[in-house]
Length: 243
Image (cartoon, rainbow, N blue to C red):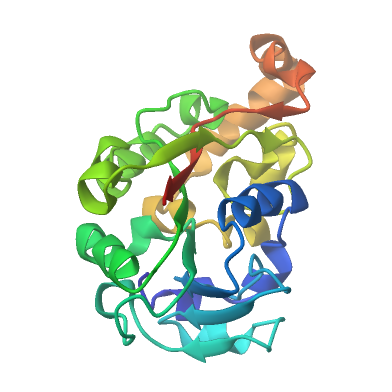
């Protein structure tokens, strides 16, 4: 993860609250592990409280905002984990791999230091189902360049299980697709500041203006009526688990 989160991460812990439905999937994938390494840990919001957690995070700002101080925190990067082989029962990385400078090295490092499951919450860049891409197509371009194709995980980790993670319509964790049934949320610059895609794209005013027009006219509701009937929807988020 880039240490640019020293800037991006201001108020991050307030805007990126853990969603218990997604947490349940991640924690279940960790199995019976007692010691867990959290790589690219951010502010630590997704860390299980009933395990011994060690967090690795390069951003001092993220470490400052931690709300679960029980974890041991190491300021470092995924590509060079300062631990012995098989040091942890399990490891996890939550929406972070796209920030790493060398994804293959980072995952191989996680596998090296982990005796049991390696659990990655990530996004499939081949997915094209999120309606915001119709207004801001650059989000797809960014995903194509920064998100590994799903086939790469098996190359780097060995055999993996890949499961879809449907996003609840009232998702508490404010990542990119979290507000899929609350479209006006994307007009809030404070919420956009907690989503790295918007930082990378820059000026999104033209797309947001088109979105505002479609919302006001009713075009948006008609165009996306089918997905609005769902309480949770699969936009391409995936849980990758290497045993």
